[in-house]
Image (cartoon, rainbow, N blue to C red; front, top):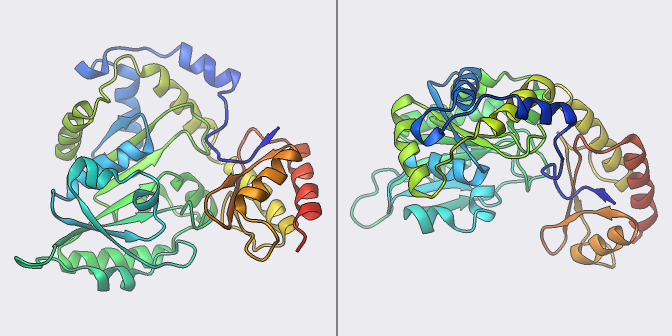
Length: 335
């Protein structure tokens, strides 16, 4: 079965497993795991941040990040298809008492002025005051969209004038870097809190990280433990991530090339990165029905809405897998 549901379905390579098993470990709740300590310093340095904190999931690192910026009863602004808004099960409200408002976007693309126009800091005793804006890069439900650096800069400038903080959901920032050529440190300078994930395109089995100041990481460490995510000998996972950072960033361009081939076969626009979004509204089937058709042909895909089918390329796919996928799409996408 060719699995295109997500880039999270990859399995560690033999070399990655070797790196895991040779990693030195300690109890991270006590701060004694040397491999994860070094990893946190490494990734923070990559993005120009003071410190980082390992998290088992991207959802948790996002929630830690926004909690550091927005107090209960205050407001976070983000686009209407953002992962934090759609795919984290209302965690901002359930865990932190954060209220959210969303702005419309086309394929998840940031329009800085639209976000800034929605913001209402210091709203007084009757309205909710905006405290932060969240951005997602690349944008999952937008189809792997890479955000414009110019729009990020505009958002940063406007947020500074309004006294607002910015959070980046950079689960696939690695793909954005490869596609745009923008350095990690350049991305990092515009966001007070920055979440990254290692278990998507980079192929690590588990792991994300929240990057920010040393003071905020100390606060996040308390909340991570409070949320039940204090971990012990996690150097094993950090070893996998070190291997991924050493070997699996540059090769993401292959995933992007494969996604372009799939998009061409499906008759849709070339994606920015590794996510192909299919709108099947003009076909005689909905997303769930088309996902079932693909499964009958040996392909797993994600039905993420009534008419939205998502195909995600990753490192475990072979040339033969891509060739077969293209053939099946051409044969089955018939109006």
